[in-house]
Amino acid sequence: DTGVSQDPRHKITKRGQNVTFRCDPISEHNRLYWYRQTLGQGPEFLTYFQNEAQLEKSRLLSDRFSAERPKGSFSTLEIQRTEQGDSAMYLCASRRGSWADNTEAFFGQGTRLTVV
Amino acid sequence: DAKTTQPPSMDCAEGRAANLPCNHSTISGNEYVYWYRQIHSQGPQYIIHGLKNNETNEMASLIITEDRKSSTLILPHATLRDTAVYYCIVYRDDKIIFGKGTRLHILP
Image (cartoon, rainbow over all chains, first blue to last red; front, side):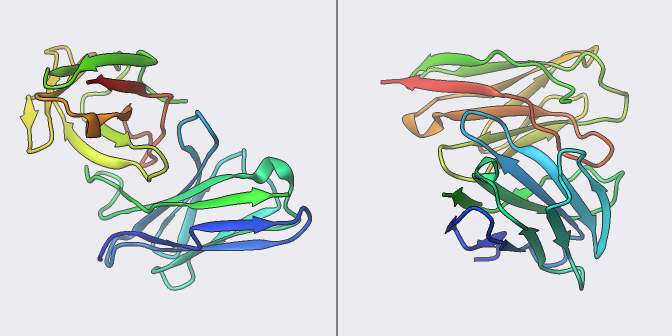
């Protein structure tokens, strides 16, 4: 399978713990996006990368959230001191090309986080 | 915020064509219209995109009005597997911003 993969698929954690999610994009896709989705809502943009550079973070992304893409390949999203409001599906997507390129994005199946 | 508006839900009988409208009145001349769908508990899936000409692929057809202020996604023969939330999207500065989409119910 050469699609976008996310790990883990499910994560249950206690409030206050730190969690880290991983996303492996499609090979050679230079753009990588992270989203959060809660029940009944569309995916909410969190941040994105061009290669290893983080280009933008949503103002919705608190200081407890950090994302990296150290070698321009896989990416990690870490949430520190989790809160119950962090419970959501976290989606990763990748696409090739530059800002001006009109290319489709490919999404992973997501990581479902439950904070108890 | 998303640059598009869509009806929150629609019904379509199985086997009939499903026509999903989208308004994007502020679209710029070089911005494409994209359609994705999300089946329950899965990641969004790309369907089709276009600039100003009508487009067709194995999944759907996309009709864009001449003034480019609106478009319609057509699923020619809807099946129960097409039940999903459909998102019409105009990329914003390289970001893919989702609205609420249209929840399509296919009726047996």
